[in-house]
Figure 1 (cartoon, rainbow, N blue to C red):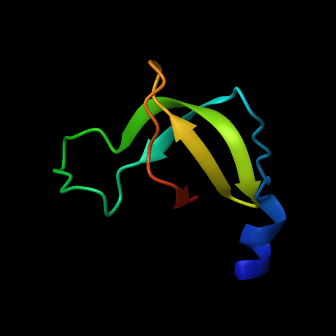
Figure 2: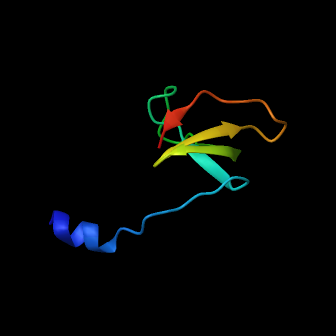
Length: 67
């Protein structure tokens, strides 16, 4: 089962300047009908595989989270 899933997963490459959404999972309580994603945010720096420095549209930095 894992092999079938792994075959269909497309790795996503993000670069500086891309707009992304951040999943609200674990950040705050989310109700059944609440939005599951927050954003958009701008990637200002790629720190490593799956780790990015994000800012809001008006330039305020967000804490660094691994995605």
